[in-house]
Image (cartoon, rainbow, N blue to C red; front, side, top):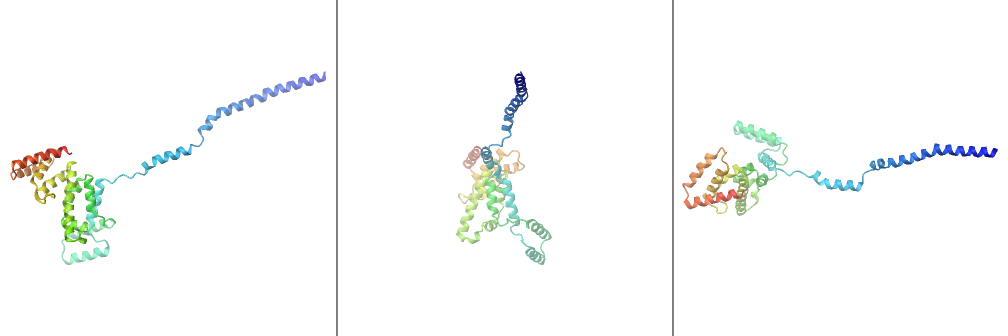
Length: 269
């Protein structure tokens, strides 16, 4: 009888343990299963993918915007402004003494003072500003193309360092510069550059770099081209006067050639 009671007590204890402890174990297992996705979401990202992604976007982040035609033109003009300006206080004071001794005009002295102060921080004044102007014109700058025509031969010689060349070499280089000036100016004119077109109208009346002589046909052609494309220009009437003036000095065949060339220029835009 006593053994029977002991057996019943043992069975009862086993039942209680089953009810109490088993659900806890079961719930723990469920909690682990539910938590698995959360653990996966906070895992460190794949380093391989991160490296590839960074490498793919890196060139875009490191790209430097190309220098604009306007920026090049401004650089060239700043260098040109400073080309003959003293570089030190000592040199400026010497210039000032000489200017005062020869009773230099007050405005010239004041202008040099302003230029000297402005150019003190310019460390690029030895760069070739003529090449920068040509490059800016090639990029479409109307102001750069116009400025090329304002350079006196002596200034071109100095800027391009022709003094180291023989006389024949200087002549050849100057011809090459003139031909390039016409070429880049024509490019700008066909892009709608008003100043460039006006320079070609004037230029061809005096010199055609291909022949070494005058070329009224080209001058008249660019006059027609200007009148056809720049009706809103403030100098329209002046170009119209130039057109009439040129036609009075040309044959009918030459006028026809100029009109045909003007039409070709419009189609080359």
